[in-house]
Amino acid sequence: MRLLFLAVLRPHTGNAVTAERVRVHLEAAGHVCILKDAFDFESPSEIANLITAEKCEAALGLHLYRAGRLLQGHRVPFGIIFGGTDLNEDVNQGEKNKVMGKVLEEARFAVAFTETMRETAHVQWPHAKGKIYVQSQGITTTPNAAFNWNTFLQRAEINQSADTLHVFLLICGLRQVKDPLYLVDAFSEWHQEEPSVYMVIVGPEVDPVFTREVKAKVQRAAGVRQMGEMAQEDLHAAMKSCFAVVNSSVSEGMSAAILEAMHLEVPVLARNIPGNAAVVKHEVTGLLFADPQEFVQLGKRLISDPALEKEIVANGKEYVRMHHSWRVERDTYQRLLRKLEGSLEG
Image (cartoon, rainbow, N blue to C red):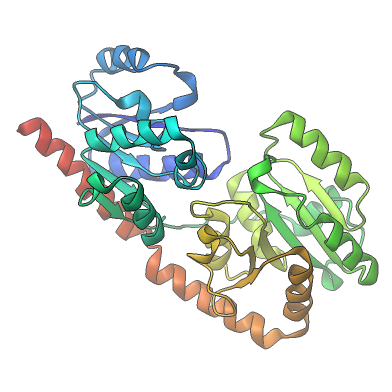
């Protein structure tokens, strides 16, 4: 089957990584998957032309609003995958909410990453009950064996012995929803008390105006560094070498960085928001903080309590193994695609 897959494809973002992983799943089942960036199109008519030109028989969209609105009204059956923005932000905007409801009416199936996301969708669009499936993101990691941690530290202008450091890695694109500045002041104060702790913000410069704000703030903050995006294999290697991975987002669908850290046996400290709390159980698979001061308290505790670190690392690894299997994710998407094939046969 020739399948149009429409997603938001900013390089090295969670959406792009998820889309590429799902594409590989579908092509492994023998489908031809034509992956396109939703931001390259403005109207359903452009998608109609693409469907005709590429001879697509079905479609899949990642993001109910951003991709789904472009897939309506065509002759091909389609499925949809919820993005975090759909249920954390767009659902609160009347017109977008209405559009997403209509997309769900037409979609043959929809996929939510968590049970909480599915329940939220059921409340908003009761007519969609029965067609929303839960499939957590499958996780694999591929650290670059040639990666050099000391070189990374030099690039980050951290001139201390790696043996004495505790580096907290905040992985995010520089945009406001990721809130990379949330912990900067509190962390800087901590660094002045304990010079061995550093926070390094790593990720693409998504919002140019906000990026300037982040860089200006970081330049004035002791113990905080900011670096650009990294290839995924290098990022995984950096995660494996750091002391802990941090998430300070205002909202999340499901953070791949958190799950990758768990898979790599690295402690996670995450802001206590619904998307993070759905995958991080406090003091079991990671640590959840409500404010910057609690983050510092938990960071100090993690450094001083190796037994706690060992426990949450082991639990996190097991959680990912049990609930975020790459193989189960592949089976789910291949099975759902058969629903679209069935529509064609019907």
